[in-house]
Image (cartoon, rainbow, N blue to C red; front, side, top):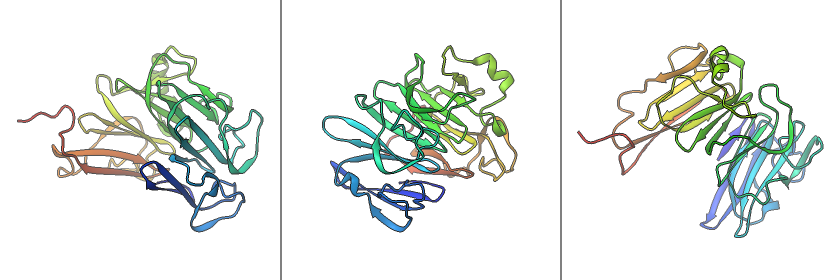
Length: 296
């Protein structure tokens, strides 16, 4: 399930080989995908997809993305507001669409995950490439169609905020795009010294050198990561206490979050999920021990 600011997309897995999509909430930009601009207070099936296999969904501020998979190809669809190019369906600017349309330029690429937030959209390919479209990062121009990030790195994860993005590499390193509000990324003076050799303007996250990261998440203007040994680090906008550090201060560098001692044990796995101004921490019990934890 994915939700953001008035829109909720619910994915019901009705069969191992098929997933049906239901939506409800604000549809004033067509982001529910029902062919109109009406809102719904109960979930309504998106008939456009029929019983096709909807594998993933992602919600932006006023737009939606769907990853549809069949036996021959993977396709990404966009619907809702497209004023910043976040639908990726046309090379020209488009105000909005109320029915899903295919995102252009990545039809022949095997996409394994999609992400959306604010007016940003992104997709990861099976070969580790990152594609972004919509609102530009850090002063770069908007893109009406997906553009591949020019980097030799192989990416396994992406998390989008309103003004920034986090990307995770296969070897557990975290880089960032954009973001100068409320210390979202880090001290810009220091970070300018760490620009990655790429036209994309990737920046390494400071304060986590030598630490392998297994999960990333981004809120409106705050960020979170989880290390392989279960440590949680938070930084960025903290006005509502969303950093979990016991105060409402902004943080320009990653700070380690202390959870109750009972939350972590050898059979636990910790995950973090950022909303616009709030954060969820999920503890799940695993039958295997987390990485880097040995028996005493």
